[in-house]
Image (cartoon, rainbow over all chains, first blue to last red):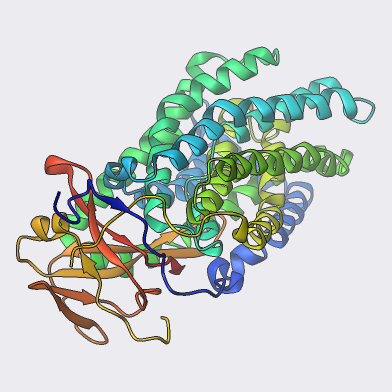
Length: 376
Length: 101
């Protein structure tokens, strides 16, 4: 057996840097204060809807096949930059850390959507029933279901950085998640909405999947291949990705402003609902992290895989959830509001989990279980 | 970038076979988060960089390796290997950290 031929697996040490990366540097100003920007978007949107109703009224007139064109453009602006950076080629590394991939994939697709449904149903329709009327609670439940079926595909790179995760594993897990999402998102959503007695026609779900997953993914992949061939990978990363980086946050905030311009009455009538919706979403995030993290601990998976793997499950692909909520239930729906509450609590909650993961690093093996023995 | 000096990587036999005598360029590749922030993933690609400013150059077992500034953690034991099989084989960098993008 020759050294480094891929069959001789040996444990070697990880990289030499011991310091935790800076949260400020990793998240940037937008990410660090995301909760504040979302709160401001809510205020601006509600104010716009109340004092300048002509703006949302005018925008709502631009529809094609029951799809709001301004909203579709904003959603594509949010999602396309996330899709263009997916490196599907990294899927070939799927055999390198199979146990970590098994845990995260099972948690993401076989556990997370169903615990989200159960927890959200219990709180929104049982515990909080004195405070939320049933029809509205079911709309919030629908939003929670959409969040539960859309695992994180981009933010995980930042979470992985903050816990000193393994970059190669993170790349593989993200591309695997995106491939599964293409086929699993719609069936899971339709099934859980059906269980919740929320009728959504299959063709509407299919249309939202085509509009907000298939089209941006195909456009992103094609653009990526074209630019890599034409301009090279260094230009793609150093110039194109830098320029496009601002598009997603801008699209997200503008979408939220528009959404809350239509949601004004709901928010003004029930401001406390935001807190109520946040309760099951927070419990779900912590639970899913705990399940994946402790499972990896039992399997003695190294921390550089366990921590980002658990964070992938805990975090959500908000842009997709917001887009699907708007497409399926409309801008004024409770479902759309629930998905936005997910964005509102995301960063503080995930940073708390990052801190916990860093504090418990010593409980995990710190050397890789399988690493090809380097050639001499 | 780490203050420590970059050390030469180790190349596995399969990485050397894939490169077939070509140089390899290790650099950070930017990924954006959906809620803001960015991280750079270390990648290895066949070929030499166009600009050599600040780039470390090593020769490892007859293969020239260029390492960009900003590749953090390349001051310890790190490896360039391959993943995949047959024509779907690609280079992968092991033992180097993600860095803020």
